[in-house]
Length: 179
Image 1 (tube, rainbow, N blue to C red):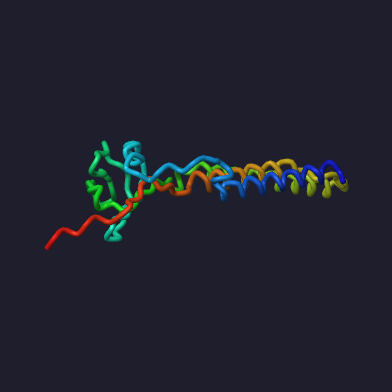
Image 2 (cartoon, one colour):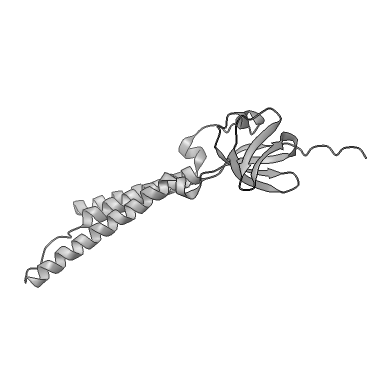
């Protein structure tokens, strides 16, 4: 087996590991899950994007708007600012908008790098054919391999960084008021 074939096998295995590891967060990052209580919500910063689901199955997407109190979550949505009482909230999840996810940019950069390498190698081979020379080797292959590695890393970052994260989950619905 040539050095190049060994290198390709190594790069393939490394790329597969980079894509599979984020799918098993317990193995990849090994840590205990934090309880999904209101203490996690109190740690959110102003401007953090959140998705809130209420017990009546309404859901809101917006950003934390100011200081979170012990009994309310201030939220800035497209419809305007609102304060949601804690007793009405079923779940709160944080997320990253697609354009704010750095993994997407890394993956696109890797694809572009691989494409440039392939095009440069093809152009070099074509220019050699016009002059009557047949070039040996595979020009542009190193850039293609680097592009594949960068794209795989970007996909892994996008999966891990873009995944919604639960912050709060109510244990039970609020009691109905007596009629």
